[in-house]
Length: 258
Image (cartoon, rainbow, N blue to C red; front, side, top):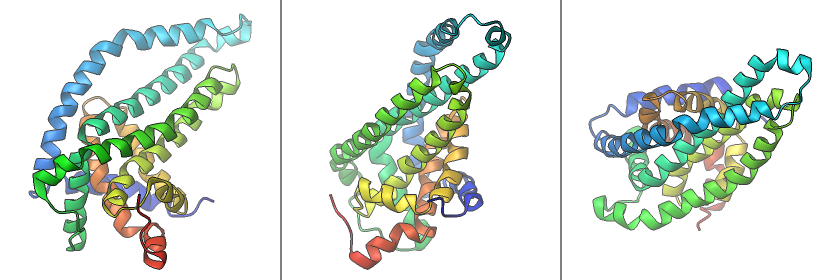
């Protein structure tokens, strides 16, 4: 179940940050970065007060037991951690909805830079415009996969004592989702369906989690989270190129298309 090299996975985000500085890739980093800056400023303005209100409401729901009240600082940290993790992935979802056509092309250019081979999804700006509807549909599929699982974890986080493990579960789940989110860009360029990607990525689950953990943590840091999205796209493309299990089905059975 847990195959792959976790520590190899950790290195892909750092490689992504190196790749986004390449001259041929910068344009497709700058445009989404400007869009994400406006998005982040808007979200921060709208959610600043809501977060503290949500945590306070969760604290008020705890039973009035003396030992629980004595540990109120710990529950505050746990609830705060869960909310921050939820908001971090929420930002990623919205950022990817806005920038998904650009990120698909960025992934294509990154793969060409790494392998020297054309991916076969050419067309420049016209192709980017044509890719908007399928790219948005792909993001909807990820959201549909994410929401019911996130709801289950959110319910667990409301149960006293049991919620002590909620932050760890959220971190693992968000890390898995980050890997799915970003490796999906090169997979989409190769016409691999989202369902097949999930199965293939599961064969390298430890490596996927290794990639997803630093992406998740970086997405929680203001301002850094603006840069982590394009860096994660490039890092995930390097992951796609170098993790053999992802391509094994395509090589042996042909591509699974939509």
